[in-house]
Amino acid sequence: GAVVSQHPSRVICKSGTSVKIECRSLDFQATTMFWYRQFPKQSLMLMATSNEGSKATYEQGVEKDKFLINHASLTLSTLTVTSAHPEDSSFYICSARPVSLYNEQFFGPGTRLTVL
Amino acid sequence: RKEVEQDPGPFNVPEGATVAFNCTYSNSASQSFFWYRQDCRKEPKLLMSVYSSGNEDGRFTAQLNRASQYISLLIRDSKLSDSATYLCVVNEWGGGNKLTFGTGTQLKVEL
Image (cartoon, rainbow over all chains, first blue to last red; front, top):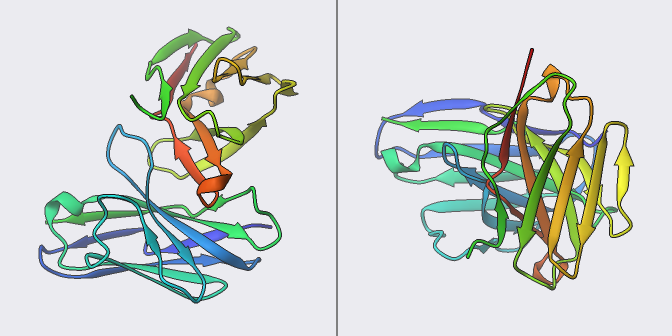
């Protein structure tokens, strides 16, 4: 149990385009999902906390108009990187917190974004 | 000062060795502590939670010292498959259950 999927696993796009990444909890409901970004040889950095049915809470320094987050259901959150640039190339990972387990998060396999 | 600090390594050890990783955290209000393992280009996976009383899971032992804000992980009888990056992770409940990750310590177990 407690499986989180992400789609796509890898995406290469041209500068200026928008990319949507999906995060799904497959066998549990998640009121809260988290989006992280990891640059090479660096730690995971929390970008935003996404609560079902409400606006996401962004961490300091993360542009909410550039990284659009939608959490329309208890099993799906999406992150859209708008007008992507090469510096947005990174490993994007989501995690989901089950409704019944406040202290646990389950991670998706990540999406590797390369912007040319 | 980073919120969660770890020695990045790499720690190169022979198979069968015992290796210890340390981590310090800056927020005294932190409530929960974990060790995650991350393989190259993969997502982090929970290795074990860390409790004040210390806890053990097979070859892995974790310790927490709240007074010193210090967490440790001990791996005994290292296997080649233990090669990975070990992430020290702290959870601040008051902040909406956010996880703060250390930069990780890289372990390479060699024949």
